[in-house]
Image (tube, one colour):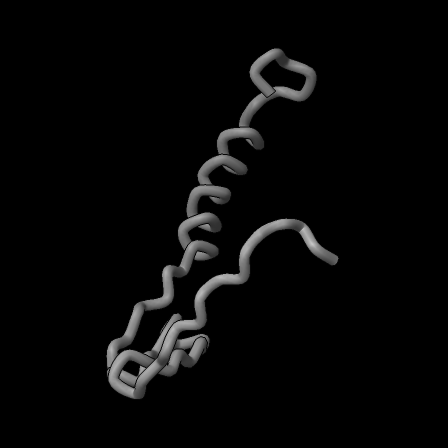
Length: 67
C-alpha cells in the first residue's frame, strides 16, 4: 500500500551506542551499563491511601449526603 510518505533513513548502530535492558521485579530496570532504576512501588502507596479513605467512609452514616 502506498501512502505517499517516504521511508525513514536507516540508522547505523554500534556496540558503543547500544545498551541492553532487563526488566525485573526487585529492580525495575537493570541496564547493561550496570545502572539500576528502583521499582516505583505505586501499589504500596495506594494501599495506605485506601486504608485512610475506607476508615473515613466507614464512620459516616448510611444515606447521608457526605457518604
